Image (tube, rainbow, N blue to C red; front, side, top):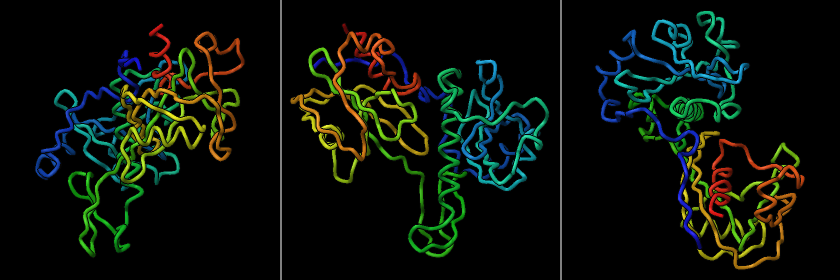
Amino acid sequence: MLSIPASRPNAYSGSPLDRAANRREDSAFIEAALADPETLFAPVWRSRSLMKGVADGAPEAVLLTAAAAEAVRMAGGPWGFLGLWEGRPVFAVDCSEAADPLPLLPEGMGAFTDLRAVAGLLPPGEASVLAHARGLMHWRTKHRFCGVCGAPCEPRSAGHAMACTACKAQHFPRTDPAVIMLVVRGDSVLLGHSTRFPNTVMYSTLAGFVEPGESLEEAVRREVKEEAGIDVGEVVYHSSQPWPFPSSIMLGFYGEALSEAITIDPEELRDARWFTRAEMLDPEAHGFALPRGDSIARRLIEDWLAQA
């Protein structure tokens, strides 16, 4: 099988931050950074990020200075140190407890928007920082209690760990690995229409979570066999993409089909088909749509098409 390199970085990757993990345990540094007027804060409200320019089609991330962020910080939500951006500390802060956080902020700060709706339009570095903040705050809000004994947990390591107040177990952010694959057969590719797709004509690459004790290549073959009944032979890595919706990383592959007959799993797919290169180059004319532009699924497709 042809090994197809990634043509450009995926959305949400290429972070401009130095994560400075060695400073997370430095309480003096963290306290000083929180008080520094030059420090930046990325607020997260109910999984949405603060942006301006969305209505004009030119979204920009809004990172608050310490003074502007004081009101949302006082709301008492979780926060976490993300790293250093050109030497300036950057924190995420969750303000989901507020019914509407905008009145707590200075005027003209924009609005809270679903990152997925605009990520393809954001500058790459900004999309990465907002994704980082969203993912970390999701973990913080979902891990307030110990998974071992059920007692409350307290934050440690500048928001990157939770310590149980009873059994002292330590909990750390988790990222769930998922494989996503474009299965190729000659000059055609396999795409499926998921039961979860809101777009009734969209077809995309198959994907699924990696199971315990399973290699990535094994996960690719299993998922394709389970969802579409296709046997896959060679599996070639393409690239990865952080996907904090809420806490995954997508690991992209190409897979070589060894069989052709499709048998779908109706619990996962409404339909699956082989699409020719000509059809893929003009999907609208053939009555289907490709996945969103900020997705690794679209990148796998575009890079395959570019290899003609």
